[in-house]
Amino acid sequence: MKILVIDGMGGGIGKAIIEHIRGEYADIEITAVGTNAIATTAMLKAGASNGATGENALLFNSKKADCIIGVVGIIIANSMHGEISPKMAKAVSSSSAHKILVPIDKCGVTILGLAEKSVSTYVGEINSVLKSFI
Image: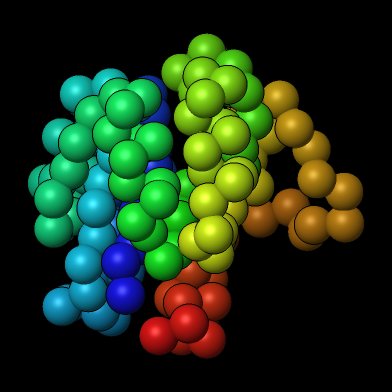
């Protein structure tokens, strides 16, 4: 299974996601794609198998992933303070990979019906969702 973790800004959420996955799945392939070099570096330090930065890296790796993980903004054009281009959002949302999205309201989207939880609580739930695919 190939997991793609996408993050921007400082890469803190992507870093937390990768550390959490690595805690249970030490040998799984995780590719980190950051919208900027700082985010990519943070995710690589967290234990990603490999990493790349920018729009083309996201477009390319979205096609190869079995599962894509990130905040809900990765499927919304111009979110994350403009770091997610329309092409990037389309590539993620059009990918045949299963998406696990962390709902945060900083992306300008509120998803009704979800319990308000901390980001760390949502990250903690990722492995239970992954178990159904691995």
